[in-house]
Image (cartoon, rainbow, N blue to C red; front, side):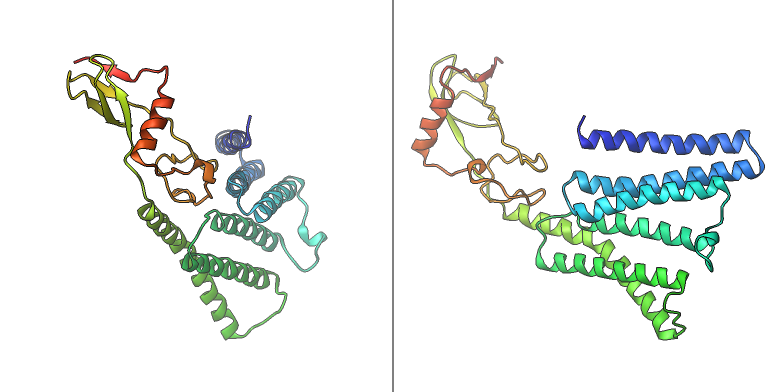
Length: 294
């Protein structure tokens, strides 16, 4: 079982467990026990969501350090939070001067921060403007995290109105750049697709019914010009090793879907008509094209 399937199974079972805990708590429990079960269910759901977002980025081989940090943080904080829900201990006993709500809010926001930044770095082969938007979103999200921690924990104890307004501005910029980043990423991909040059290769074959030699377009059903037999030539298409995108007839050096570099050996190489005929004859040696009678 590969990593992607394992993560999907874990996510499905985790969300199923969270839903089951919530249903049991609401239908069969009451009082303090019901509150604990509901809180446990919500805690499982939230941290499973953030950890799965990070795990998806890891599976795509992007931003592994920040994504793995998010997974470890979410799992550790899940255990920490559940233990305090059921053991009835006070965090103030470990950290005098603070209460449970402050630590919970900081932990929740930090988990969402790891998932957020990991997803920001999911795209590849970005143009300069899109890369600058991503860096802006990442930096502003990091500054916003500091503002949240400082606001809840009172580290700097700034009571200045401008300081608070500046935090709001940073949060707005982080939100806006995070929203527009996928749009510009899609625009970059469309531009690469428009710049991609393709060919219309023909395969020189002999009709299996009448024997007439003729050129047939690959990947398209055509009829013999003499006996009208329907002939279709299928060509095996290479795929991108990163995302599986079909690379047939692709002459550029990057995949138009994910931007991954395409090895020179897998790039489509334009040939002269004589070379196409020779190579097609070699490939079809001993093979018959697909035919369909009228």
